[in-house]
Length: 148
Image 1 (tube, helix red, strand yellow):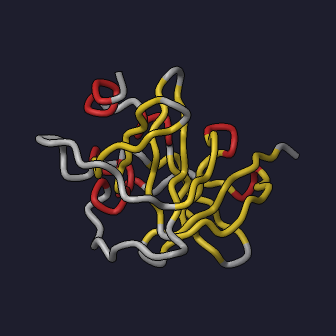
Image 2: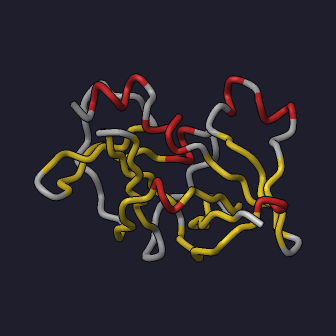
């Protein structure tokens, strides 16, 4: 049976996942430099290997309550093509293999335009994990222009 490896992380006590093949690195959280006149969900930029890395506040991007950051907060660096962005998350929990039969289509209500970043749902060991489409997040127009 086919499987994929995912990194599981928390946002507001809910579990989310990203395909590990789309993750370049996991960094400790550091406060980004603000960029004037950028969307609220873009928290700013940080220096990353002598390049500029835009940081997305996933809570704000998904219209969730922002509970702030602490010592467990991380930045997950994801890449799509030549574009990298950092996703701020509350905590990184684990990296695990998920078998194909544990991945289900997202329900119709989750397929609305506002949830275009949801790839599918992982249902494993009585856990419901939202599997994100990081390519859709990285390739949003605002981020592509900011990272260039």
